[in-house]
Length: 387
Image (cartoon, rainbow, N blue to C red; front, side, top):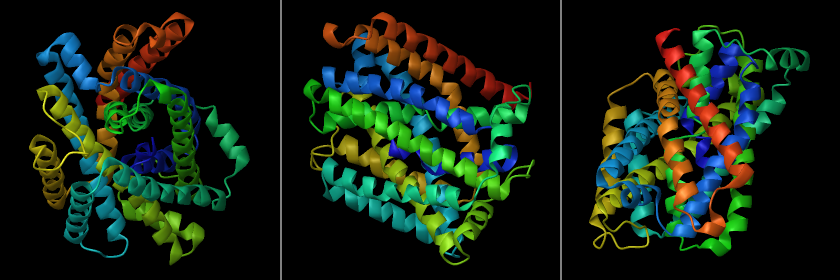
């Protein structure tokens, strides 16, 4: 859940505040129940079946559908990986650090951590890095938002405006991302947990969802207060860094912003790489675990390294960071219906009877998932095509 506040989320939230003031703020809190519902089902599936998302699809629907699902996840993961790396390069640019230096350090750091440590050691490092996102809360407080304007904007949602819809889809796609749904299920299995851990895992997920959206809302508030009035949007991460940096001070401000952005991006980089290779392993039915030695699980560590290095090479070629990040979010929003459909079906049919999704709660989840899927398609297609 902390990986949800990644570089793409930060950039999308900042663009939302700069372009639309506080008009996308309410959406951040409306997404909390949806995020919890989706991730809680992955918790149930992981702890109560001991199998990953793609593995369950392979067993229930066959290898072809598992391959299709894994491909969707890989597309989402690779897009997210490019976003994280671009965000880190952008953060480094605030201090005139060459992009290739950032990318080389990133590849060496992550490969070294993954190849030499177990899942628990990787998790501890990523959790520590993710806590730097609290810097955005401090920035929101320092921005001293105009409460009358905030209350005026928060209830105004111009759903007939294509630009607004496009950013709404991006916000949705950077909150409920296919790779986060997949990652949590596989990560719980890799930890060796079971159904006895279900209550604490649910509480952990709820806290994560709230924590994530508080940080995202803080970014929207800070951006609206400092960058509001940019109808054309932002052009670079440097714009965000300089504006946010001014809230704390010219020297420390940029550093705090860069640390907050880099913390989430590093967490997400590790998560998306693991999600991608776990998806490949589950689709192929081969060994895949951080607890295994690299020589014992070449199909796990090999694709992990190739994905990381390939992403670094592509980002090093030069891309528009802002447009890329928002486009990846919109892509995720368009993929949401497929991911939520399978998630609901597996929770309804694949779980043991005592943990199966059923009753009124199943009906509520079905309605929320349907409305979310419809909104993702409407906002994504409407915004992209200018409806």
